[in-house]
Structure formats: structure tokens, C-alpha cells
Image 1 (cartoon, rainbow, N blue to C red):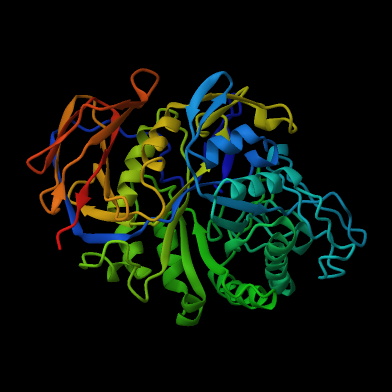
Image 2 (spheres, rainbow, N blue to C red; image 1 turned 90 degrees about the vertical axis):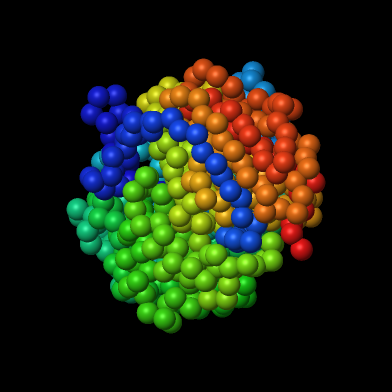
Length: 517
């Protein structure tokens, strides 16, 4: 979850990851035609899927229609408009840190800037008892987010991740779950390191036995090395130094095992950007790296950052460029790498497309998670109204129209499906994925410039690519196509040639594609 400041004018959230990172989209590139050579002998792993974090929107909205829209590919009527479901299969559940119940005369300290919609109720009310059946725990809290988690699983979301923005308030040095002081100091009390791990592991165990859902991984942090988690924050957050992170990774593994959850992964570290994630990973010794079987990173460096270096550092270089069998796993020693959170304030979706393409070309994650399905101020895939509604108590916001970026993401998420293998291409504007069972090739090409471009998809490395071909088109911004299907594309002599309008993403599904023997 990103740090949010309040805009001085009307209070629209503004991203504040690093002062050196601009939140404004760079100007469009000059139009250019390109050829994308698809190389089935170069693979970047099996695609795990697409997702969203459930906080904060699911703590308020847990209806069936929004669950269908997020976690199925059905057509869903939202506010009188029929929308294509995104087909997300990853849901990230946030373990809350807040409670209004005093403990031994102490009460939670609330930041004067805390937004009511961003305080999530926690389950562990006090430190008296670790038994989840005791009076120290209240499992009726955070009902709406739990319901959305269960609805996601019922609709086929098969990769559920538990994460934490802050330890429970009573584990914090200043009893403030927004952070300590100016945000540069750890806020978790040293004697509560294990307790934080116990809290998360107990939630994972309770979810499996009582909620009927199973977390496949637990991430005990959120942007932990960042220095903006201060006591005057607008949301829950906590700074963790890298030595403390190392300690908590090992404790997390121990407590998951104690719950009988040996198969649940420990993920690290949900750092805010690629460079910070690289520095954090490089700080871990081999023991910590062995325990951390999954690496999460957030995409708030946007067009910048050391994507390639992070991919190589976590072991991805062992898979790149190898002639692996399509559908095969990443080489032994490599860590699973997800972009576990991305968001921006560009409602048009052009920046989303640009950064997503860079991730495919350089970071090579096997999953990609958009931050808020519902949000105001251009951040949401669906718009919350009015624009300042998140500053009021829950129940004030209403769901507005889908932003253009919703349809941009649909070009990727509805077609590059879990289980497909990501193939190499020599053009950053084009992503290729292959479904070996269906013999289907998916190509997503984006013209981010202000003029029409022609793209040539060179499929000559395949034994056959006969078609037929279906095409979908979305233009960023208010005008133009919004996920429009066409039947006007074809493969001719091993090439699929397409004219792509300005600021447009097009997806092609090519049937009857066979690999060379």
C-alpha cells in the first residue's frame, strides 16, 4: 500500500513514494512502426495471474456484482453499464491493526490525519492470550473484507495472499498504527517481533479452518524500508529496518509451521519500488533468502528503476534465455517474483499500459496486482464518488463509472490467463503468452504514441500459426474503443500485421498455433 498525502486544494490523494518519482505521466513518444519477433524458445515462466488488494475498498463494498466484476470474466451490469469482468484470480487480504478496545489502561493513538476508510479493524484485541478461541480475539471484526475474500475464492481466485500494513496498535512503540515519529524509525516493539508473526500465522490458520479459504503466502510487511510511515499518516503503516525484516522472516516461517501451514510461503518485502526492493534483498543473508520463497515488489518507480537487476538478483536470470519446455517451471534457485502492487492517478490508462509493458519486458514477474479496484481521484479502476468521499466515514462513497484504465487492464487480464507461458519478444510494446493445451497464442500490443502505428508480429519461429484470429481494442482516454471485439485480423505467411490507432492497446488471440518440434 502506498503512502498518501492530502492534496491542499480539495483533498484528492497524491502518491508520495519518493520525492524523485514524478506522479505525472511523461509525454507520449513519437509514433513509430515496429516488428515484434516472438521467440517460443525463450520463456519467462508460467503466468500466476492478475489481482487486486482488498483493502480499503472491500472493507466497505462486498456485494456480489463487484465480486463478479473483479473475479470472473462475466459481463456485469454496474450502474447501468455492462462491463467485461477482469478475471482476477489473486486477492490480497490486509490484516488490520486498529481497535477501539483499551488494553490495561492503554488505548490506540490515532493519527490526526487518519482517513476513516483506511483504518482496518484487527482481530487480536490484547496481548493476554494467543489462543484464537479466547476473549483476546474477536473474529467478527473486518466482516466486509473477509466476505469479499470468501467471494473471491468462491469465484475461482486461487492465489490468496495475507499481508500487513502495521502490527496491531498495542505492539507499536507509540500505540499508533500509522507509524513512529517522522517515519524513519521502527515502530514494532522488540519484544513483539514474534507476536506480530503469531498474529499473522493465527489469521492464516483461522482462515483455513473457519473461513474456508487458504492463503498461499503471507507477507508480514508493506513498504517497510520507506521513511514516510509517521505518526501523522493518513493510513496504517510501519517502518521496519532490514535487520528487523530478517528477524521477522524467520519468525514468520516458524509460526506458520506451528500452525501446520508448512506449505504457505513467506513473501518479502513489498518494498515501494524496484531499487528499494533490490537493496533490501541484497541485505538478506542466505538463511533469510532460503526461507523467503517469494519476492513481492511495488511498481511506484513507474518508468524508472532497476527492474532487470532485481529480476537477476532474485534468481530470474537462471530462467531467461533458456530453451525450456513451454509450460515449464522457473529454474531451480530462482524466487517467484510478483509485482504485488501498482497504482497511478492517470485514469486514462496510458501510464498503466506503459509500466505494465516495462514489467513484462524487464522485470518478468509471474503476477501483476493493481492496487485499488475502487478509488477516487483517478486511482481506481472504478471511480468512487464524490471525489473527496474517502475523507468521510464509510457509507459516504458510491460506485461511479469505470475509468478508461479499467478497459486497458482488461486487454491484458482477460486474455493472458493463469497457466499460460510468457514468451520472449524483441519489442517492449508487445507481450506474448502461449496456452499449450489450447494451442492459442495471445499477443498484446500497445501503441502509446499520438499517431497511428503499424505492428508486424513475426510468428515464423512457430511450426504453424494458422488462426483464426480475434482482436480486441481499447483506446486510452474518454474517446475511442473500449474493449471492442473484431474479426478482421489474420496470419499471412507467418506474420500478423495490424494497424494500431494512437494511444491504443490491441489484443490478438491466434488459434491453432503449434511449436516447432
